[in-house]
Image 1: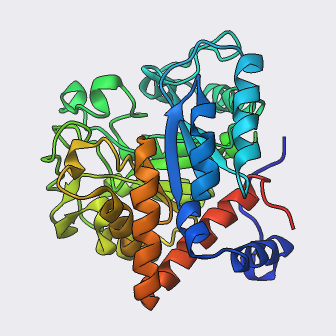
Image 2 (image 1 turned 90 degrees about the vertical axis):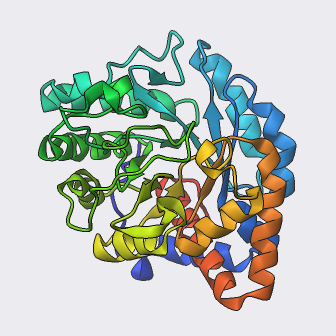
Length: 357
């Protein structure tokens, strides 16, 4: 399996030329589609085929739980790829513990991150690499992991999105950072891109963004030690980072992280120097976003500096694509930002070995 370590300077590499050539062939609707990752049931991915083709989707998120074999899963994923105008980023949640999409005979049960974080680094590395090889073998190109959130020991299971499920690698950001440094290359060298989540951290919130609009971390600052695991993952070459949908008043009093230019662009892109793909958490079913029309969710995310909007709801593809293209058509600055977002998606696809010219 090819390594997915960071490429050479994009401006000087043949792969960057391929990205530029591909980008130049995309019209407004195709640019809008490339920055969307839409959910579909893992056992019935073919249901999304028409949507993939119609909206020129850039990615697909396989959700739910499956006990099927690799041989049973592979054809459906391949069929989805055949419907795409450009190869898709195929993603899922294969963290371990309670968050493991594939649980069939070819996909051993993985310990929780909290358990793995207490194991020797060699065990974490080998477990991650074996899992990634199995995912790559069925056509999955991106795992929405690892969790880089730190849950303080005093909070523990009283942190609903992470601690309750033991999704964190530990309660010390330095220890979490060490685990992230192990996981990122182990997965990417085995052929599956990593996504650090949930920036700038969900470890201190006391409600879940999936079920509440009140999730907030009132302690997070630009110098927060809890950013350390994200910095470690960036330094290790993670292809992507996922934005949280919680609020961080000391970083931006006016917007959730996914819609915040100070957090997405100012903190992640500029201060931490992240060059890769910036993804949203689910912009579809999350209660935190109920007040925002579906199309505007994608527009606000991209305007803030995000590159790929994720929604679990297939019906969101139409309004999101339309809103992105419409905004780009009447706002040249947003049009340039949309093109830049699509470029980041294409670079990730090139890293995954999906792009050819």
